Length: 161
Image (cartoon, rainbow, N blue to C red; front, top):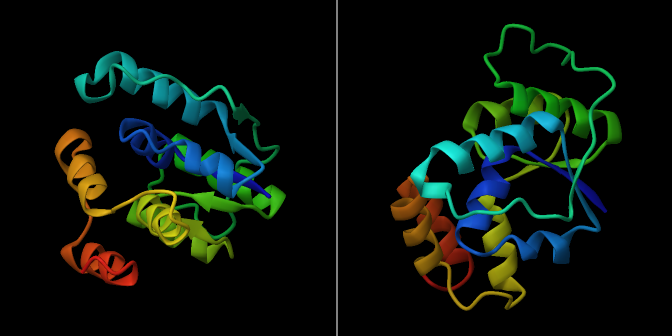
């Protein structure tokens, strides 16, 4: 199965050393060039991400059409817009965290999965020992925001809450 990723999911999984779960769950991880460029700019300009390296297995593919039907007034960034367009063209699951991007994905008929969902799946498959320390790292090191309700639900789902 091929999945398309936006910047945040790939970046944050790399930050906590869990990017390899993507290779277990998916045959291929595709990103538009805008996502790779944003990742590289954040590595270059944001101290939180300066030690990260682009995963060599994340393949750059660009959408043919970048128009998103019914979303013309939505304020999506270029990485989100192109990732959504690529996922739409290939009927792929999309890895995206931002609330607006997830809403847009659902409106387009796509299935969004974010960092929290991926980590829950990884914990359920015993690929990681515990979610709590990973959530703590995401918040502290990446400035990742997750609602208390979503975090508690995820922890309960894997027997940590």
